[in-house]
Image 1: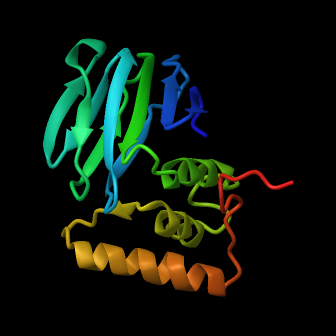
Image 2 (image 1 turned 120 degrees about the horizontal axis):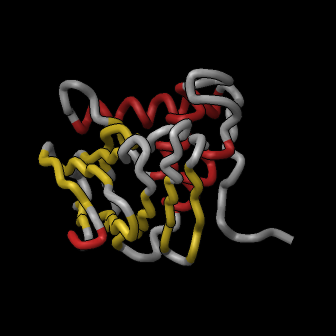
Length: 170
């Protein structure tokens, strides 16, 4: 988890809080896209830069929801020294892969460049409907990389996600 950032889960809603202290990291969500769900981002406090399909939108409590259609590349970034509270929900509303994605990403030990790096991240992407955007945006290639690395190679080499389901087991 980033220093100064917390994530809370509520039914069908994720709440991200960026403290905005002098030593806190900014929240950066790299450019990616989703095949099976839309996202709705709402800033409750502060401001957030959201780039949707190459167009930059400065989101604030006054600007309302930012709708991100499935298939459209998007990214997000908070501002250094500025606190921010953001909610994120999906359409369809019961798309539980999103919470599984976040829980598994934050369960990874260390930073993404340590402790295995790319393969466990691609495995989480594979199960979470997340596709990175390459410099030359070719959907078929982005999907193929996630499928090969995350769907086949990571499990073959013994990588396992911490959370496979949101259902509680007894």
